[in-house]
Length: 339
Image (cartoon, rainbow, N blue to C red; front, top):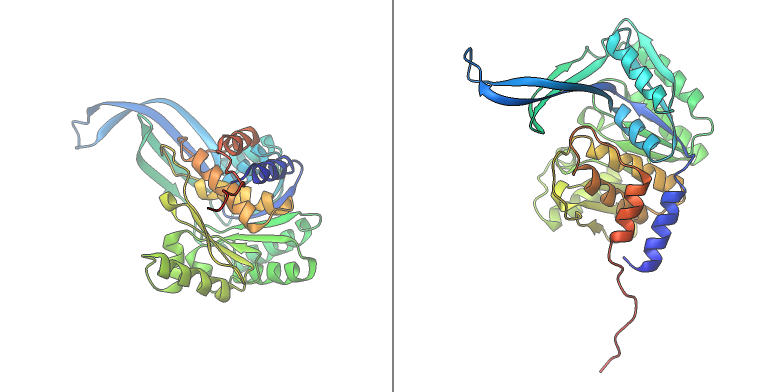
């Protein structure tokens, strides 16, 4: 990265402030129970966790909202929750972040999705999941109507699909048609149940496992990676496909240009929980601020390196991202004289 590119990325990050991003997806409540282990239970060969504290955070699509808010955006959220304690806690958490939560449908027909993680000495011991069957067609229709209203004035739309039922083929078809007419940045974080329904997005971001599943073959080397990216971009009719590859960074595929690989920034990894949500939040804001796909991928790669160094469902601040940009050693553009 040259000094000029550094300045450009820093300007984009400064432009995140006030961007209105509509997040549509599966909302969850992430509950963390922290403690330490000093003995094994006499009742069964399991550790006894002595609880020291508890915390709750927005999870799933809610973690995308939390990341957007931390980066200075004005997130708007659409989805559904149950009429229960977890749902009420989730709404309050989102409001406390400054998000517009008026697009959340509260209904007695579903239970709010809640994930409880028990951690000892910063390591996850077990996770407990609470969730309902998929929502009814009636609730799906109501959500589509809410999304239609919340689209007005959005700088970008981000679909956070966790495969829990909030994202339907009808909703995806509606967003693709509206994007074709209005031209807003439209991003999808995909899951397998809807692989056949995605189309017409600005960018779709599967991880490597999801990409392999979608194309029907393993991504094992540069050749298979390139074929997967090309195949998915054509299948989903998207402007770009970005495959997140864990410790191998990100790979970006666009029409008419060679694939771009962004190697992971070296950093100690403590927890990958929610890293994909951070990548989506940063990518959507970079595009909304006028950045290119390459610039968005570069910023997302730096952001991922920061959050995996944190424990739990983590977010990052604009100051952290700006520091990461400035700490990248600039590459000189001066050419050496020919001999």
